Length: 60
Image (cartoon, one colour):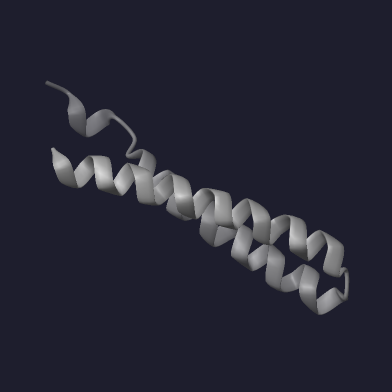
């Protein structure tokens, strides 16, 4: 009934991914490649989670 009050998990993950990409860019520019790799791994995990959510959403 009040589904428009619920937060969209896909939208939230996309925002988190966008924020991590910005942070990764700044870390890469600073030269800390290890932290950059950690951030990119987190981004990859978010992308796989987004893909699964999108596939579930498209089946409905």
